[in-house]
Amino acid sequence: MPILLLLFIAVPILEMWLLITVGREIGALPTIGLVLLTAVVGLALLRRQGLSTVLRAQQKMQVGELPAREMAEGIFLAVGGALLLTPGFFTDALGFACLIPGLRQLVLGRLLRHVVVVRGTGYPPGGQYGPRRNPGRESDSDIIEGEYSRDDRHRVQDSRDRDGSDER
Image (cartoon, rainbow, N blue to C red; front, side, top):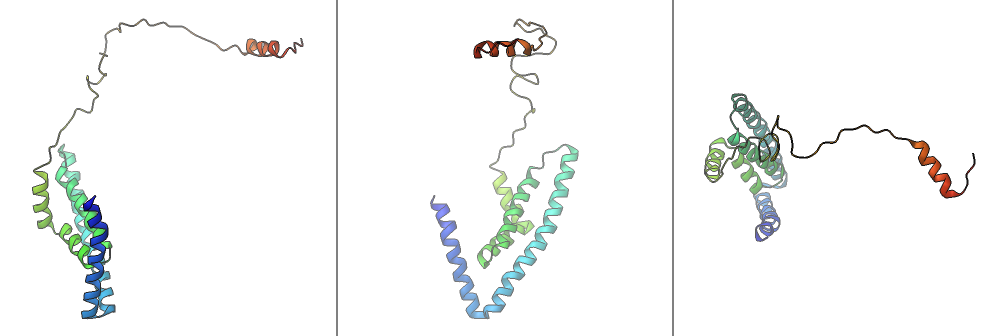
């Protein structure tokens, strides 16, 4: 809970302080222009980096490899893009840090050391046919085959008997 408190209270306060300080130094319009410029440049970088990451992931999947690093990079790029769209200089700095390939690789390398990738067969426990069923083997339970048909004539007759209005 303290981390969320820090994120939702301290970061906006820091952003406001930075915007006011920069606005005092360079003026209000240049500050607004700088915030908009960082958003536009960030989105252009995000598009370029995101496309190359998707292409690398597709290449790995075609070879049959798990694109774990590319998926993690995609998450970093999405977070970076969201931070760049948030107005402010602190979030812009964090967003650009997520988009810089060298820095992103360094952080991902450290994070992925702690991640364990487990590959499964895609089947439930017990194999493809479930825990107690094998193909080609008869089940131990009794199977009763039969046919049924619905006869609504008796049902209508029964409801008339209950009403006491037997009209024939």
